[in-house]
Image 1: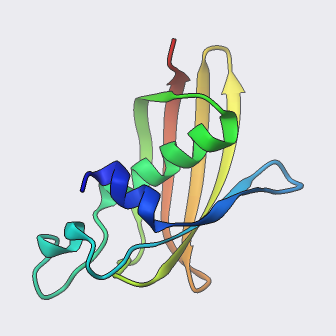
Image 2: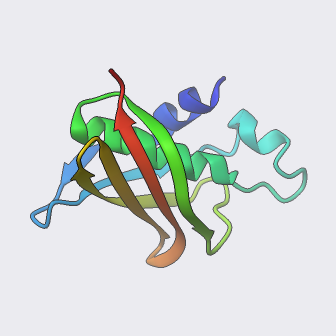
Amino acid sequence: MTLLDSIRAARLGEPQPQPDGATLQEFRFAADDPVFAGHFPGHPLLPGIFQIEMTRGLAESALGSTLIVRAVTKVKFLRPIIPGETVRVELKCTEKADTILLRARLTVIGQSAGDVMLEVARET
């Protein structure tokens, strides 16, 4: 199973557009997802790259375009995300010229789990 396969399998429902322009999506990674086998034995947690890719993938769904990451401008992991937890991603997108700025807040049971900021571009 690839990283993207794991993220697709973890999606709970469809992305939900919000009145303020944000998009919400929830994810839950099963305890038997192969990612947890090696990260870390005895203390499984979701790797940070998954949080970055969840942000990009949600933006692709919200914008209806394939997106290429130009820069990871900020990533802050605030708490471990463990198997079986529901992760809520709130995404805001801002377009400036040929760059799209993404900001995602990740929460688990109302607790901040991470912040991700990316600069992306539409694939041409």
